[in-house]
Image (cartoon, rainbow, N blue to C red; front, top):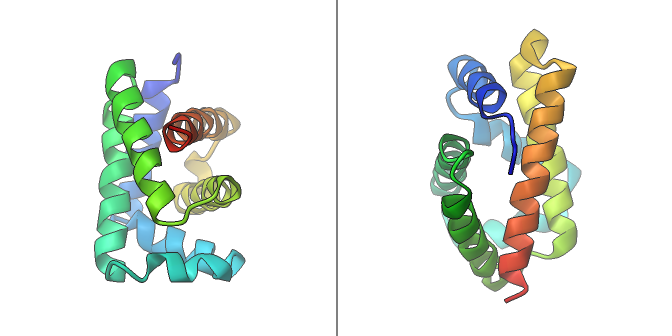
Length: 135
């Protein structure tokens, strides 16, 4: 994939140190900007949903240099999200809110290079998940 693993890992470490529950803030942004997605999250308690997303983000960043792992796991995740009612448009909303959250929590550590690395990484994640959703 050619993603900048070092920048992704170091910036995630900075964010996690400042706010260990990154996904709590992410969902605040998501529900404020796109309240129509809230019903999709009624299956799981909010703390469980936050934990699952947090674990997924960490796992992807840990495996960012393992293309086979990313391909297998993100395609499977994309297939699973079809059953939840997730549409292609929603991937853009999630990406927007994830980047806003990371930038907010990273503060001065959110450089143009870090922003570009996360934008590229999310684009790759989105692509693999949508490929899985199409199968």
